[in-house]
Image (cartoon, rainbow, N blue to C red):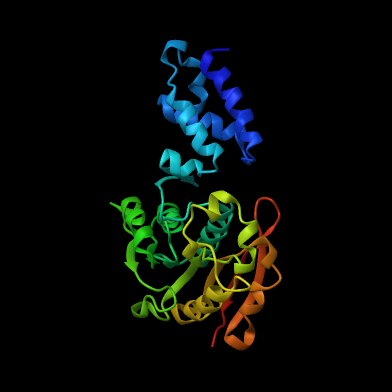
Length: 281
């Protein structure tokens, strides 16, 4: 074992003792980041090339600063995104939401599907859809100027139409034309603040986390936005907390113009997102 791998083993134990959920992964990611190699190449770093700055970044992660803030990057499906203070760090759970959306769009058999991403944050969802549905026309909206500094970096050179504004009133020019509306909105109840992981509670923007006493305030607003934007037969996909699986589909009722409202699990088989179809006239 070389010096770096021995230090990684010690760092893993330190991160585990600090309650970090994935200590081995994070210790290796940070070692690769500091030494400018891939995780699979850590064994090739010579003892003389060990960089003591490794322990500086381990201390930051030990204090529960997000791994992605330290490295400045987050991975989402096939994307590498720039992230940092002021923008929500995309989570692996959302990848299954996007996967469902991609399948739904392809099943529509529309030549150039029109897609809207509400509360885009880092741009992860919009960029993934633009990349994986090549002829799609993707539009995205974000309210926070702090978040938009990161969104603009990530979307530079992309074909996504990015706008700043309130998701509840966005894109009046697209009313009745959209094939798919997708969103990972804030959905944590204010009463759950103390139970949120430190990485999210202390570093993600509150605007991207909390939404009223039951966490569903914005989702209720987005239900109306989605209905306004979608064409008849168009689909909405909304991420929610795993504890809200029984509640969100009930927001998309037949009385409000919806059909086929349903909930779906993530890769860990926990309720993760709701979908509904705008009813035909």
